[in-house]
Image (cartoon, rainbow, N blue to C red; front, top):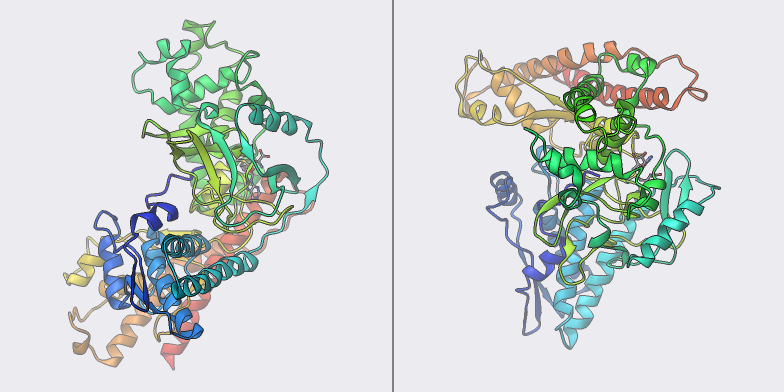
Length: 557
Ligand SMILES: C[S@@+](CC[C@H](N)C(=O)[O-])C[C@H]1O[C@@H](n2cnc3c(N)ncnc32)[C@H](O)[C@@H]1O
């Protein structure tokens, strides 16, 4: 699961690392770390921090009223949101929008605030304890509300979980500790539910490093002797080939794990012709065909050559294209990027953890690093999970098209990472303003305008960075300072901007056609998914077309 091991320090690390909190006479100070210049997004985050006048140290007088404390706590959360913003969130963040920006960002921010409170509480005394407890309760309350607002219920179904029970028993006999049970959910296959009420910080699952499947296993195997001499082969491809053989190895240490994997993965890489036909003209169509072609080419460079040269190691019946595709789907949909105790970030398969499903508002966000003391990978909760509730993981900040291609599903709820990239060629534009120079360096994009929260006039629910860029591109006056431009010029400039955006999205919307006339209930899984994706695209694009059209009407008047 892609979740790429986070670029940011974990909330836990952050709470500890910034333990500069002071308890002066009658005032408790909580500090968040200042923006790091190491952060690739530093310049833009710094700009926003200045525009919003954000603080990094927060004074809480012990004598202050509860509402006064909560007001300062709110300012602290606003700063934390900026610290944890991802590139996409930053692109869409408007100067007057203080958040929330996404469930992921909100969970990261609230957890970092909670950790800061906890680290001060650990050494606090007297009135400070009471104050910190008020802040703790309020922060936990905000985390709980976030979970309630974003609750995703899946329908649990009866299933024979004997194989999964054996997997759990095998895991436990090898040191796995878990507070999760396996269940089966309509449309998602297996998933995990909490076997008891779990609170923030509780570890839902702990897997010893010795059960993690990583490239280290390849280095000790006989296939490595052959593969190491091949040109241009990555450690990830070696691991893929190793896992294809291990899947059928009766004496494998991971036999139970491989036996409990699905026989088939329903990812976008397996879309049949009718599902692909539905997607014709969409970006997903391109993504799917390119990904599949790339995998086929990779397979053809390796096979049948390897099987012919080393038939005992690469048995032809185990290395068919079909089985290769299955292994690719396994690694795409089940692997996690983890830092092992050797300090290296590796793509791994993690038995039992691979049963966790994804949510836009997950319970588990941080699982990127093996604990060097316990030599185990822990999955702690960033929000509570009640007994019997499905416990979700975050696979990362992924778009619907990526999830369809490599995982075979679209998450429920509004996905803030569903964006449409825009590529403008400004090489022929006769305007050398500094604004244009700056905005040309940014990758521009749009998303559903329902995410927009800006109250400012002339924003049309479109990202202000995109508007600034297009205004500069289309600014016939070539004026550097807004004071030089008359109101009529501004309206004319905006009219051209909106018409340009419309000229991109209206044909796209027409290309998607009206709602497709299919018997959705009886459609195959891939057709249903393709239609779901197309509905989503239609919804995003029509929101942009509607915003531009109303913007043009407003300018007209
Ligand atoms: C790591 S596995 C999770 C366990 C999986 N459900 C199983 O039965 O093996 C990832 C796969 O689970 C399914 N999945 C995960 N999250 C989902 C969600 N929110 N909705 C639907 N399917 C989901 C997708 O098929 C995805 O490729």
